[in-house]
Amino acid sequence: MKTKFTLLVAVLMISLSASAKFAAQAGEDVLTANFTTDKSFMSYYNQGFDTDEDLAGWTVGEGWKFKEATFSSIDKNDKRSAFIGYNGSGSTTLLSPVLKVEPNSNVEFYAYFQGIYLIWGSWQFNLIDVATGEKRQLLDAFDWAQNNAYTGPAWNKFSFNIAEYANRDVQFELFYNHGGEDLVIDGFKLVKEDEACADAVHVFETETIQFMNTSLGNPDKVEWTFAGGTPATSTENNPVVTYNEAGTYDVTLVVTRGSEVNEIKRPGFVVVSKNAPTAKIGLPEEGYESPFMGVFIPTNVPVTFRDCSKGMPTEWNWLFQNTDVTSSNEQNPTVTYLDKGVFSVGLTVKNEAGESSDMLTYAVQAGGAQYVWNIGFEENNKIEKVALGWYGNYAGTNWLGIDKFAELYKAPLADAQIDSVAVYFASNTMVNPDADITMTVNAVAGNGEPGDIIATTSVKAADVRCSADSVIPTIFNFTEPVKIAKGQKFFIVVGPFPNQSMQESPYTADDFAIFCVRRGTGGKNTAWHYLEEQNENGEGLGTYAWFENVDDPLSMAISPVINYNDNVSTGIDCITDIEGEAEIESVYNLSGQKVQMPVKEGIYIVKYTNGKVEKRRM
Image (spheres, helix red, strand yellow):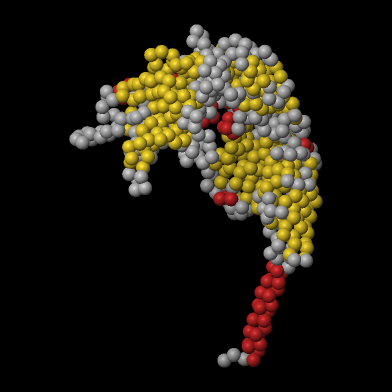
């Protein structure tokens, strides 16, 4: 039986609970400005490598030492950094103490290094799970430099999500190969998500920050002010802001509800540091892309190189071979190639924080003849068969009423001719080896679709080449060279493709497909198809019309040989020598950047599957 005292306590508890709930609701209803960002983290472990005491608990391998290395450009209070230098052989490590990972954490650090010699000795950053002893590689510097076309030297910030190791003990290892580059490390931190934005946000010039309004009280209006940012003001809830100049900047948010106003200002919240730029050469867009060259152009025609560098360079130094202008300090210089041949181009960019270089070895062919296509140099490893399930293939055998496929090419910069066309097939299963596959060169009609036929040729199904191990061409030859006038766009049209099935064993069905590069919605498209028109019931009408493939933008691996002068040796066979080397894993130019299509007689660094690395002439 409950006593009066028990009942009194129960009533009091209910009253307190209701009061707390009301107070919480009232607090939530008070107009209070607040915000966070996608880069807001609070550090709970910091290592600045400034003093001997800082390294307490770290296991320091032979060769590591302190060095003043300009990290003060990022952290003005910095004194020294951890440094390890090249000495020719061996390896060493820098190992953190055992650290407990908190929920929603990242590990981050800054590294200063070059990319040129990493192929001889890449350094790695690893995480070690103390309980299991399992080691996980978070970064291989050589792979990162290749993927980012990095040469350096520059300070680079690395950040890795380690949330899956929450509440576990880990160690971090910097593994250094002495055969590579000098390496400087600083600003090592463990950080966790921080909605309160207790720490300032650190970014490099040109980086973006997404601000997110977390104000209470359901404001009717928000007004942001971003000193040093672009945009400088915003009324969006979650604006994205770019910071282009180094400095320390305030952020202010004012929220309004009716006549109520509340403001939050975080002084010095955004810290923007300068960083050395990353050089990247943009080859002349008016030239042809090629399976074997960076760009193919005629002689004695002006072409413009583009600066595609990142990191806001302020100085440019271009170097050219065999041009009317052999060097230039313009950002986007225009040059004219004077003689036929295959040439290199170099670019060094600078700003106050440092410099970076890009070198494209034998990337420009001027004059002569070369295979061309609409696939970018960086897309060479993305070609694929576009299979449409039960309906066959795009650019090949299909049951969708697509009779032919056409690839559109830009106009040549000078009068040219086409001697032959290489088509790269992904499949070549056939019922009748004697079936013809027809190709035509077509003019461009007034409405942009394939127009009048300029020339025709064909190959037998049996002559279509295809390999499961490599991409090989099937050559369509013309009996006479096909003339293409300067400024005249043209199409290569292929089809129809064989489309039969055997009704008895082995029940073979035709299956032809041309390799393609798909780019997704809004991407570049150069493909057209000749589709049977249908009535409202989806039945074929027997009539056909051309359609641009805007729904699935792509380019087909079809390569006509454009000949600006047919009496010149070219780089068409430049890949022959290395196709026969089964043990070659990858090829790099002398700047340490990966090369997809080495040029014959060029000097390269070659890496083999057995780990051997050598410099050799291809």
